[in-house]
Image (cartoon, rainbow, N blue to C red; front, side, top):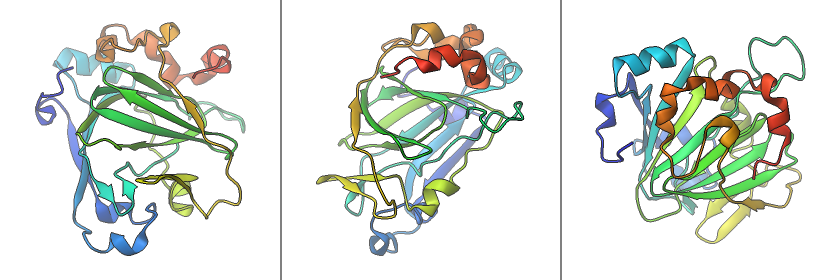
Length: 243
């Protein structure tokens, strides 16, 4: 998908994240009060290139979104998304139901994805460049950081059957680590933090996801994205190393 496209013309909903909406997840709370109305990034929901594509997405309860994050700083931190977890799949009434996964692709720029296991046992960092695909497995919270000097445009496929849960990240004022100009800094609101595991993006042929190949094209084969709606049917795939 062309990064120069006017996404506002091909989406059903547009919103912005302002600085005051990040008040609970920043490392530097004093700095926060200086520019509360500053727009940090733009979010375009249900991006589609035709009405036919949108109909197919809705039939499969899937959504293709675009997020645009300009370069910048949040005090000592690089600009980032608010961060959230996904809830357990809604159609399973069991305590160990997996949460909904998600998949991202960088359209332009460089993204640093921070993935944190819900039980705090893992913290994964993945730097992704144009065309790279990054999968958020079940039970991981995540934040996207733009630590580059250029605009970041990224896409995601996700189930449209749930609302993201921001509260666990807010309660801890962010994930276990902040990414700053001086590197990663531990968040003191966590009693213990695992060592950071740095991984590389990869392709996921079992899901039709290939780095360098525009994943919007899966709108013509949405059954490949069934794992986003029914992760419990793909447990063997999720048991394999993802990075």
